[in-house]
Image (cartoon, rainbow, N blue to C red):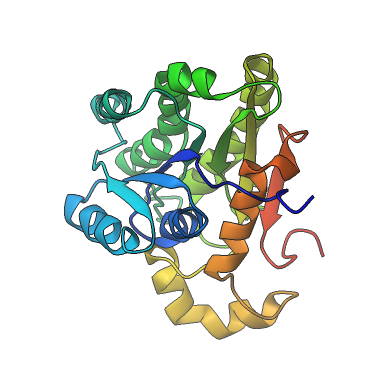
Length: 255
């Protein structure tokens, strides 16, 4: 029982890992002995975080734009050159777009869906050979898709593509879980509520105190909150859990 949450020695890829929730998860993994690859569109931010986290463990930067197939295939190919197997894939790279419904643009819609929904599916597809090599009956490989509580309950803001894409991530998680369980790969999702991130920065600046007051826990999320759920989903503690969607939101969609 004392090793129930041990993830040391595993190899992980965290997409969108240079900031926000991706950075929080990557940090939690590195500090608990995981060899972590992080990817992001902006190479400088990705390289800088990998350098900082390497002071605590092993973190390697592989910058790619996962909003297109060239970037998805490029990242999978580069990782395959470096690793024979992949224990953990965290599909976290994401984007948001907000506009009034009368003006909502096709470009914004396509950008969000390409990154938030198309990206996780094809990233998973391209990395299946490495995930299959890692997973076994006793210790399956893990895929964590980062959804959102906006994919469970519609938000007030006019972020139509974001909420729709995150609802799609939840269904994709369930669908993949049923398909990949036979390959000893478990697929689960985390649905975060408000966390300090670049995506949430403007909203928190404008409405931070109201958001905290409306939350049953009276606060926003911390790095420990999201990293803890991710570590659970990658450890022995969750070896009988697949197809689950775990809200990490202080009770916003449950209470």
